[in-house]
Image (cartoon, rainbow, N blue to C red):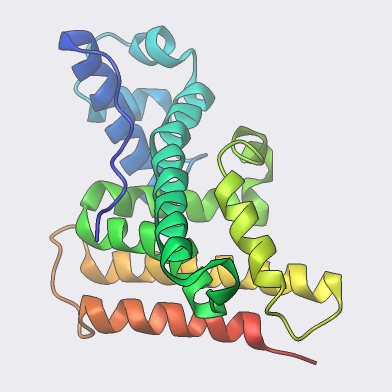
Length: 220
């Protein structure tokens, strides 16, 4: 399966500097925490002697965070759309199962996280942003990158046994929290050296999808 590629623009030394800052900010804010990471930390990690580098490229740390989201969330949305269109063409819109929809939603990020260390840094950062503690930053991403996700979740609703909208929204929130949290735990298990965890990637992904589907299938 293909995986989403990070969005990159520009060329030359300027783009290499920008890229270094993006990767350094993503790694430090992912592992240390957004609030615990300073602009100075990011500059040092990116090996930038110019202390105003982040200001020049991104204005401030929040601007850097916005650029990281753009770099990751845009291709994720595109990959979900590609998979959804392909599966719909194969099965028809009414032929998609709840598990099909969960796979379309969950696997693009999960497969990227398992394949590339940089995406592991990102999922640690994402976990902070979607939590209650990330509320000050949710304006950076909410309703900006998730058009396809919104349509997938709306399609999931047709498969749900519960008529209660509040409960449905909680189930969706729990599914997302579980999926991202599980990927964070997988990232910690892999560690910086990328060691081999006990459960194979294939079995892990199957478990992830099955559990996420089960969360959405619970009825009261």
